Image (cartoon, rainbow, N blue to C red; front, side):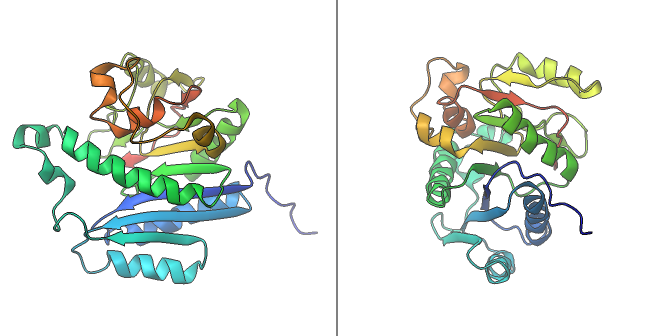
Length: 257
């Protein structure tokens, strides 16, 4: 007899990502996400927003993905920033910290445009991804899908790591920052999820219904309940400020450069 179908956690998933000059990893990474989709939901889609790529293959790869998965892979290609990186919007000192208000505003506008396009597809789950990951454990990601369903959370996140140093990566979006020490401790001995006000880790798994119900937006006004100017220089903090049930699972650890 054929094996039973897998237990799906959601009826539909849409992966969302911004992309620019990604020909080194885009095809392989997009296909890794697609392979996970087929384990987690009977319906899946992929929504991208590309801007100002100057390499030879990013846009052709996106075209090929659309042709290979008609109706599932959709997106926009924009020419908006005179072929400059968003980091160039920051002065040298800010660039060394890899962020500034002008860059955040540009990224927030891109992510919001991406979000609106994805929600038109009426997914059960929306996953905002930084597509430039080096690796991730697919089984751990599937368990993260299951955890979000079990907790009925507005959103769940992993703990991203830096490839070279093995230390926590993308920590600026974590609120409260005091949760970081707890996250470090629990990566050494797997434990229960950590309740947070904000996080990201390169993968944010969100309930689409919660996004709509709470009117979560990357263009949200700064929240007085959050520190560091209300998250004004981190677009993920601004988005998460409208949501209430957010958790970090240290067992999912995507690796970035």
